[in-house]
Image (cartoon, rainbow, N blue to C red; front, side):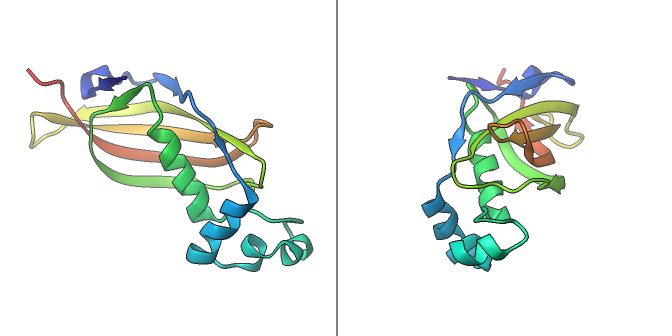
Length: 149
């Protein structure tokens, strides 16, 4: 496993994260009980009667899986800070048994104006399930260290 510095990011460059995440029913319920206790996240019978027709993962849960997937890259980014997430979308529900994977693409970058040892990288990520359906998309901004001299 290597480190990917600011200089290594190429605008338009895409990375397929070499990991997937299996979502379980027990985890959906456990996470939702603590962070988002809506009936369609924690009660199977209520979820069946909902517009979703069954138990689904909460948005904080899906975002946490997205964050975990982002840390599974072969070469970890020399990230100094996450600066923000924009256009976060959850167009399809995540269900028990779904296998989630992620692709990230660098959409822009620039050197820091105030700190010569770092830069800013903008990325666009898509998380899909085993059917190729998008379950999360987002644009992110990160501060990335430059390669040490």
